[in-house]
Length: 482
Ligand SMILES: Cc1cc2nc3c(=O)[nH]c(=O)nc-3n(C[C@H](O)[C@H](O)[C@H](O)COP(=O)(O)OP(=O)(O)OC[C@H]3O[C@@H](n4cnc5c(N)ncnc54)[C@H](O)[C@@H]3O)c2cc1C
Image (tube, rainbow, N blue to C red; front, side, top):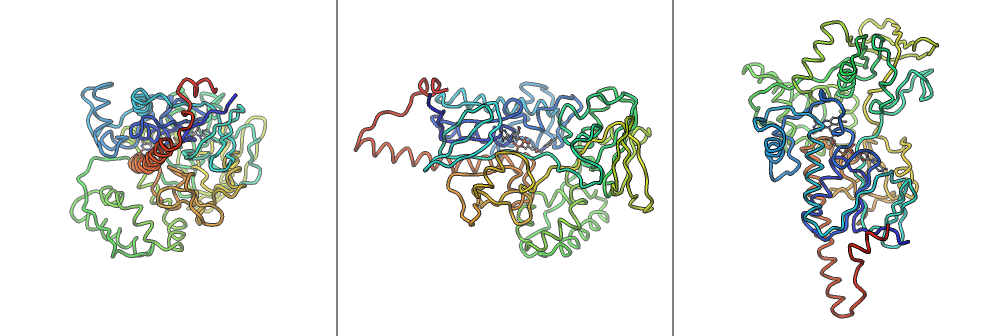
């Protein structure tokens, strides 16, 4: 039996991989594309396979088109398929968004020449074989391809470096999105969420949806919750090429703008939002040491103010805090201990420096994704790094890539046929997690690959005219190769 062969294998069928596949098929309907995902249906990924109705998008509908050239594409789809009265400012359910992205791919597949294949399973290794690659899946399938795109998204949080705490602790859930994280939590029990970002917010709301009436403790170093969105008039763009190239200088610039906004009676949010279209340029204008300084001193404040929650979600969290069902703590965990009836977590309070103790039924790690690829357990990543086909970026925020997303190998050479899209590009771009950035990457990478395969096909056609060869496998032969 022959191994399935494709022009492009995309590993990861979340937003990035699915939209890339759709763009490729729209541009070159005859291209053979394989999409591999170890989780849910295409387009869902971690974010949009959401189980609960309370999980809302954290970007309003007007900002969530999957197509950069058609800004109201999502809104029009929503109006046609879900709610004809939907507005650009609405925060819609995340599961609905997953359906939208899935349908975008389905449409492209329906119009293509039928060479698209979807594989359910984990890609566990990547082995170069002359000018091709074999992508091995956990079920033993090996996909043969000319080009591989890693669209593997965010990884689980890394283990917290706390005495007594490990994956083996029965009351500790290391991965917040695993169904096991909320299983068997007593309805009137006590839960500790470590981290106070959007993941903690999601998990607190999931607990509520499951009918949990007990106490929720949310603990992070600084105790900063994400801010809710609020409709505001835009603030003018204020960063340019002449702006400071130091973290301190940029902070001064932003503070001056915040003061100006306040004097003008404007909210702070549009000031931060004005940076959003240029965040990648701002990041790239900073020397490496300044980027390090930003990560050390400013990152938690940036994250809390930049990554916002829908106002309904903000109101729900404010309600939990107000009613005393949830409590927010700032401090550093010093030890973890489990007994037969609870987990005991000691932490040093950020303000008082006093040691405090929490006794809870479940501890859930919501500390945000691990970005240091050297520390990842995923077999595919280990395989790629072990063969030196890629290397982490200098700040260990992702993989080292060039401007097109080509992986840079251990000797510093960009690959002509291995690419990454999405959060793996964080070292180069910093802002590369949300749809407004990812849709541009998907569209640009598709254009690059389509150009490559189109010229490739022209060359082959020319060669064939001069020296006819047996035809490429037809769709039927491709299918029967499985
Ligand atoms: C809870 C949550 C809510 C969010 N809400 C928003 C929002 O409202 N708006 C917004 O713009 N952004 C939001 N984001 C940001 C989000 O990360 C991006 O919008 C986008 O979903 C990222 O897509 P991705 O395809 O890059 O990654 P992912 O969605 O993580 O998809 C990666 C996929 O690759 C698969 N995979 C990984 N490794 C392998 C392997 N070896 N073999 C096979 N499959 C593999 C994973 O199972 C996963 O399905 C949210 C993120 C989260 C986590």
